[in-house]
Length: 141
Image 1 (cartoon, one colour):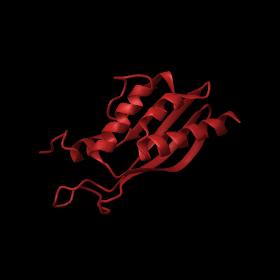
Image 2 (cartoon, rainbow, N blue to C red):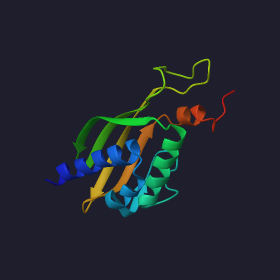
Image 3 (cartoon, rainbow, N blue to C red):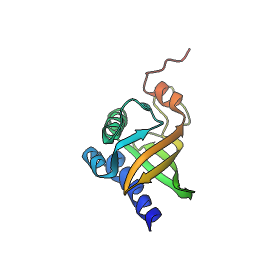
Image 4 (tube, one colour):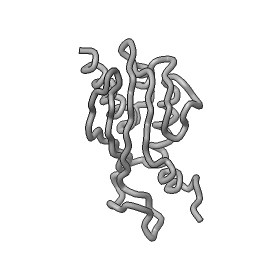
């Protein structure tokens, strides 16, 4: 029952916060001492605020962002989420095209630990250098 509840928490976080932009829902899903060990702003902010800041930044950079949970499994007491992210208005290109448009699809893995009915901690692995290049934060050459 607990893992089923935790899976619902993770699915709701993706659907409501990241895909729909309902940032205030983070207060209901993430523990007050939640720690994000990945993404663009790891370990800089804790609690639900880190999710509000992260999701807000991603949605501002990619207003048509859509994250899909490709697989959600259990590894001991941690949920493992394989995901893909798309910016729905763009074409399917593996790298910047001649117009400097970002890729349509990026994939990653996020491990999530829940406690007391809240998301308590997460670790994300993805190509953050590609995202920083796409957004112009990291310069190539």
